[in-house]
Image 1: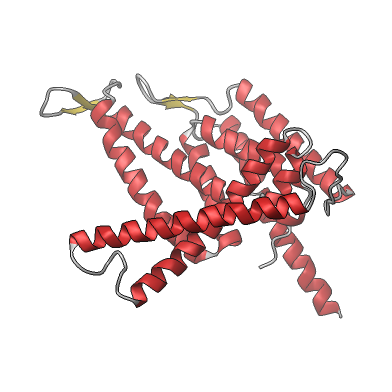
Image 2: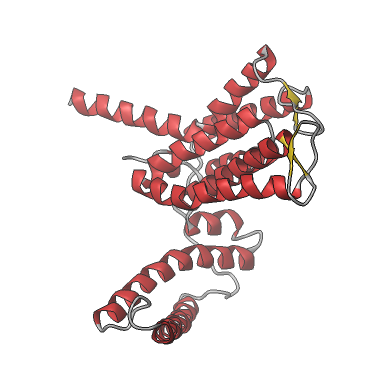
Length: 296
């Protein structure tokens, strides 16, 4: 599938993800949290495929269940008491619903960060922050690039170790520990060698020299300007609606908030359109490409 949103200017990409993550983490309305999770899931499926989302859900579903179960044990606020726990503390309906909402919020944030990692590549980071904070942008870009390379190298090392019968799944417990230490040692050695190679490559290309210029393939087009303006307009509308109380919701001491009011439905609509912007752009560009292709 063609990812047209990733091909937009880095400023446009960053603008969307910054506010999408901020809104997802700080708007505690349960419907908005659910909309954020659904939107993040749809974008993740488009960017990474269904298999990646299935793998993510294997970690996110236990997180949701665990958080939803743990929160009522430690959080005893709420007026609706369901029962008393064996040690005497009350189990309240409000704490259960709040724990579930918090778990879904964390899961949606994790999915948004996975989309962010896919779209905001290291070259985009360097372009955005290279002149402002060059050292930090370099560290961030190298870290983002290093993590997937480390995982790939780790899989290769484990395959090689498994072929000679020295993987983490082979032998007794002590032998498995010994094999694990060996794999860690190999990965540390690879990391140090990779760091030296990177340093030599940067030095040979004149990194840090005064007057050194850099090449960029990014150009802010009229399309980027229109989409950025639309995103800023949506963000402004959402902030105004939040200030006016359209997304107001509370969990304690009792659950209270607008769910099906006209104001809340307006907020849901604007919020959904904003979060689905990458998917809308990708689908629209895909349909347009198919029409042009069929017209040939």
